[in-house]
Image 1 (spheres, helix red, strand yellow):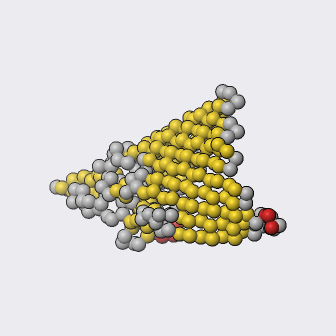
Image 2: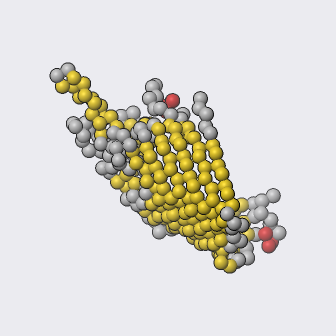
Image 3: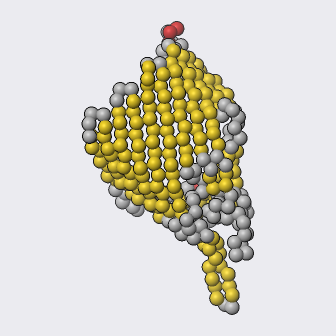
Length: 269
């Protein structure tokens, strides 16, 4: 039961240049899977205040955009794997502040060639220490906290960038794209890191319209062209090592797809 206001403004400086900004209140409930996996769900809903400000340049052959943004999270939700129960569950990590830049540019120098580049910087930082448990000394109960304040948010690379090039010769379209994902932490205290990786994909499409088959084409896709080994999703934990006598848990990693070749025939009617 939340009111979620959203406001956006755009101002055109010239025919080609415009600036824009927005504010949005966000709300995210825990995954419904948790309602069926465990009898008691202790995760609080996540709320956000998001702001962005940017500039956009648009002409016939060139489109470019640069955006700066800030998001304040309350009760940020992340996912962890419960090794005892054998299930993945959501958990709260408290307040998080995130800010960054997103940039992209698309350029068509000639009719048969299109180029696209993008880059993103994301600084997401935990603002609070997370409680691990309690200790009792002489009848006095004292909470134990993990030193997570100031640490980077798990599974969130600071840098992501890449691009795509596509050429078109009559019925044939061929494209190649590359994406670089930076290092990601697997624990809230940042004591386990997943290394960055680079993926290259290739695709080709051949239209059969010239033979009277409209909206029909053959397509081939090669994912992970160079067979890069990488981790896709990470099921995170608070800590891996021992803090104040409390042992951490092992984060779980999902291995990304190896080189994969797919062929598709699409028939339109």
